[in-house]
Length: 175
Image (cartoon, rainbow, N blue to C red; front, side):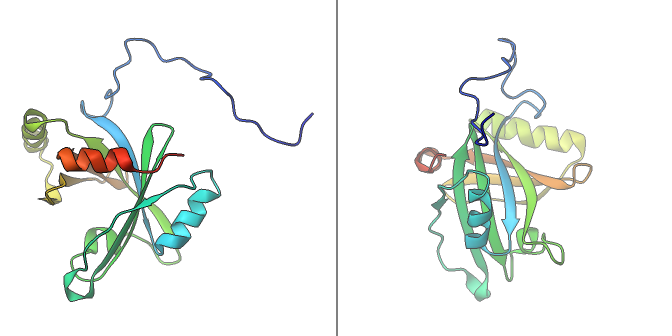
């Protein structure tokens, strides 16, 4: 018996051909798992221990009032990992997420929004369900909306990328 683990070379379980990619996510495609980290470099080192070694750091402009936000993205097994280091004024949604003694904590699932119709349908659904967007905006690269999912213990982020945003996501390092 070998002491070295070798990952399977093919899918062990085939999904049914009718399995919709967005099932169970309110009809939107799940594409991202995001974590808040105390230190971005340390977070990247932690993920490297689990085989996710290649990250793309986003060039973010300086922020007002001494706020800090650093983001690194990586594709792995068809999903994107997002690491977020955030602190300072205006960063409460991310910057206060870590508990005392934690260096990394799951923060949100990310869902793709494909077009204006889906964006509008999302907001109609949220209104119908009585859920509020706790933070949202339009960076010119992506429109985004964060919604609390307290029963799950984290947020849901809906992301509607522009053409530039799609190009950015397509340029992220793969593992």
